[in-house]
Length: 487
Image (cartoon, rainbow, N blue to C red; front, side):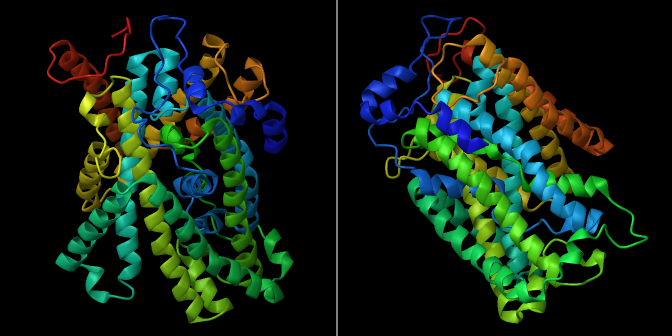
């Protein structure tokens, strides 16, 4: 369905024939509410060309969302084989496809760093742009903190001193700093590193699925689970949600993409298909080939299944692949957080120094540094409830994103949209209502501590907006000049 829509709405031939300067002029669109204001849809660093091309962008999206089938196993434990297979088969159409379609339309209409912050700011003004930025940044940077810990958790199986104490703490610190430095060297390096990491981490799952074929018994796919095992729908839906969200994170890098009007829709289409296949193929193979107790389907069970199917060598490879996947997830999501802060500075939501670029690598070093420092602090905490709160904030941000998408269609119908979801406003409302209902369910079943932490973070985000307004009026920091009557 997505391919037909992209072809039918692609006004592409003309895009390749226009000069980059002409395309930049077209993207500097005046706001109907503030005719003198040019919307900042391009990067502020024209001295270096945009180099993030289709293939690296596909793998960056892949690592923003998934990074491999690691972590899908609890869906089987929670509800049984058939519900898990149906979940990963159907949930992308309920959640992933609508989110990817929205990202494709708005990233091509507003191809600048900041992504969803720009969308909320254009739709509802600077307060909601700042709130969106705070929600998404907090949820993103807390998620990033989990990946160095995940890498060390796998390495400790090989290097036992990393299990506890100062060797563990130092290894988390060093891994975070090294991975952050790689991010500092530029998106081109990060993008092609994502390609390499993706291929190497997926290869053992491809081998396992092929070796498993003679052992597959199809009747196992239709099992509803073991008798007497109570279904945990909370775990089931959270597993699906965790493994298939964050499609919009890549929008914060739109200003760094080569020909974003054409590249974004294509990359998102391929990434959606690629990600879903990467989840489903190993899940079908392992469920069909291995007979174990349902309670054994903990996170990381794929490695144990690989040993049953092929031997210890494949289990070791999958464990190494998990580390590589964690590295890819860290790099992709750190890039999104850093470029989001730069985009917020371009909109004058944050002080001007947040859009500072490295002289050597032309990367937003302030955003990378701040994200890294928060990540290091969070890495040493028991942050189970905080991660749940981060997901709650992400859900609030997604509800605001859906509302921004629909309102921008009404508010700015004349904005050029190189890719356009082929639905009218009523159809878009229906498209957004289904995933919105799922978000509401996720939020309703949250614990009291999650409500408390999320509420405090939201109050802090609101206070941050007014603090920045105060700093702007008192000229405490320098801000970019953006005319806006609402500020």
